[in-house]
Image (cartoon, rainbow, N blue to C red; front, side, top):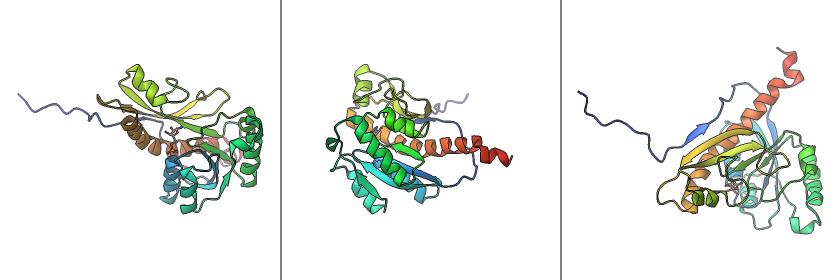
Length: 227
Ligand code: GRF
């Protein structure tokens, strides 16, 4: 009788729930990234591009917080950046109008919300219909809104994770593109769980961008003309 121990998956391992990214050749995507803080997702997307894993170009970083470290990353990565400080605008709509103008000036086609800590309005959403993606640190539809990791720990869930989804007017509610599940460990605190979730964010966000762009190309009239 075989008495060797049964192999069990490591508790540290994560599971990514994603359709395969089709291997089609597409023109480089023109991305505009919105970020408010550290910018590690901006960095992950830029590194995917540099390593030829994502056929894209970041046309511009828009940031709203003058102290956002994302701005320093943009300088290092030679990405043009524009500060639009929300405090300089009377309404959310006025800020979004300026964002749309900046994105159009830089010929952006896909808007990537990578830690954008502002609620967006129909002004932005209608300017880029179906072409805005967000990353959220929970397995949506669980724990939308702020402090998602804290919410997950308080609820006592055993599996947390992150979600890339399309942006619609309702916060954290658009259709889900990719999720990654991360086990919650017995001694987790928000910082430790957030760190492990972010490792997965950096994997799934570039993948999700490639996936939606490949799907959009597949359904575009010009690609159908070649079938
Ligand atoms: C990420 O955890 C993301 O899920 C949330 O904001 C955080 C941004 O992190 N929306 P970073 O600025 O990309 O490091």
